Image 1: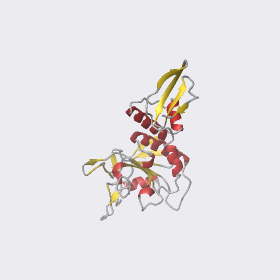
Image 2: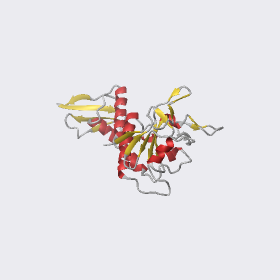
Image 3: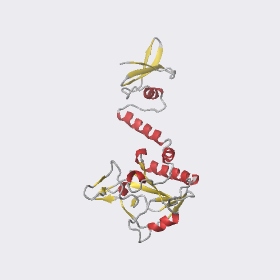
Image 4: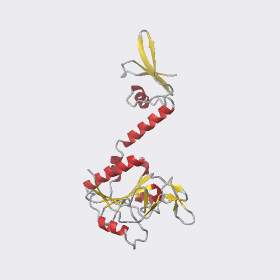
Length: 253
């Protein structure tokens, strides 16, 4: 069970609004602290912090999640970052507009400063996976929008450092991608006026054999005293004797 602790000691946050536009959460950006948890928390409320940095959450090495900035606010964790497809650097100033913080959640993971490079604690990784997975589901963040700070900020080419990124992302999205695809298929079929059933034999057969999109609902027909069911797809018509769903056949239009 995840352990959360609210810590609202920082005032380093902004509204998710700029230029009359209210931004919604589209990205999650992962960082490491490069130092102890308490040093990061102290820095986020220090008057000597020139960038007024902060993060929404800090997950310490024991797996405890410290919630620092409400998600409806923009934490100051990646302000200078370039997120392709969201913002672009201004040719004159080099600043990226709109600010990356406006549409992102920033997660900091406690990790010692370089050159120390110990293995990441499993309890911390497990907590990070569970917590971030929950955020992905709440805010519908696609896999492509799960980012390392190093991917969007040229000044931080190793952040989070020594982190098992591919395994982390795979664990966060395990099963979620399938659920998203099924929801999308269901919406698309229904938009065409055709009921979708993920477990039905015909849609599964059509996907596995590359028969394209559905052109008709399922329909029943009979011949020589036998009852059949069929369905038309863009690259063929498939059919089976009713009750014998393991023996699906196809014909061309």
